[in-house]
Image (cartoon, rainbow, N blue to C red; front, top):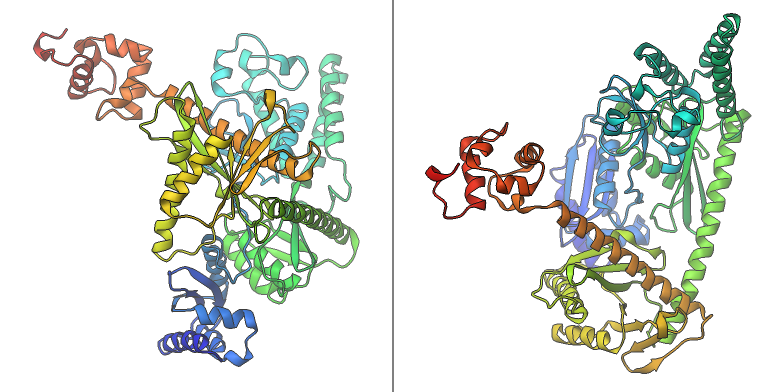
Length: 624
């Protein structure tokens, strides 16, 4: 036991003196107050005691104990509650010594709005605050769009926005191609449309046979009544339904609502593949690559994944997995507690369910093999970059800078980040240029951006923050002038351990003829087919794309703003009331005080404030 481990063990022993034997969650914190590890236990005292027996711990846990300077605990009523809290804290805090799921994306849902006489079918992300029936989640926008298209084909539900619906005077193209019943222009009665909505809900609930029988009966009744045109329309809907409900290993007939989860591990890395099955249909699949050490076994990774994956989404009644888990009953209890109904976790060994799990397992293996192949290629490219610019080792973090503006207006600078895992989009940053800067002065924009980024990093470093986000290489879009501007900023800040490179577009902006400028090297060009050149071009183009996106977003915001936004006490509601009443900001500006006072929702005092803003120096008594 070394001295640092002794200190960490002493901290844990001191915490054990007052630690209860209740179920709960414990956190080990480092000197900066960041979480090193989050764990749960049926008995906190018994579990944490194991950390003071340093000789029995693997090297990874010894290192964790050595960095521990503080412990925090939260007691819970049951171990299942502790598991849910642990998963939530791990996802939020991302401790270095835990298995961490990187899943910061929201999942799309399908919603049937119930706040309109003719419910609309649409895709939805985010909080489910709109009144309606929600179905999902779906693995991707593509998957939910496919379902929306199928629902239009079979049930003829509208997908247009309420504003478009209210202004239609004749049916749109969707009606012509038999994808909508045109309720906007009265081609279907409210009762008939509600019947379509109820059939759609029955279909989404997985009761395909019931819908099929109802449509078959309706077709026969129409044919018997000699309403052959209506019978043909119902027949087309039946054909669409038959096409949608085809069963296979991807659309298993024995599953209604379930998630199929399979993990596969190669070379100490794990891929977890999740298939979403809802209403007997496959809502798509997604691959995940949790962060963990090479020593973690597949069942441990899968257990941690399941707990964290359902932290922010409702679990279905059934999970099918490809690994036997040590704490499967505890995880099932925790998910049942979260869902307020029973959640079963099953490891099928035969039959159709086993075939579905094997299918997901194959997808997990193939996704991991692709990722490893890409990582190998990325590693070779980074080695080429290190050799080209005389770096001591392949760069782990490359930062690329660019800026965008229109004739000097709405200037934005951006930073993108790349490394061994490709583009790290969570580390991208936008810089709204503050100035004062001469419009179009790209050098000044670059200087401001770099100064803000590195002065802040140096301040955080002085405060004891870790250097995990310190770059090995800076790539600037530009030539010798941009390189000089960047180098001057770094010199002023005392930063000397970051290589700065500028890549200038070639003659006539031809890709493949770029000039590369770097400290200590004469300007040079690479062969047009050099893989490293392609890599540098890809980095530059990604920065350029992000810069244009940031600029357009900022410009759109500026366009939406008006002089009304500058008036103190005028929020979005009052601004909306004024614009709706007068039609434009110019109409508000030209209005008299009496006209302003007549606007619904605008008090006399607010009207006087608006009038005074546009007419400074005018006495209110004389305003008309």
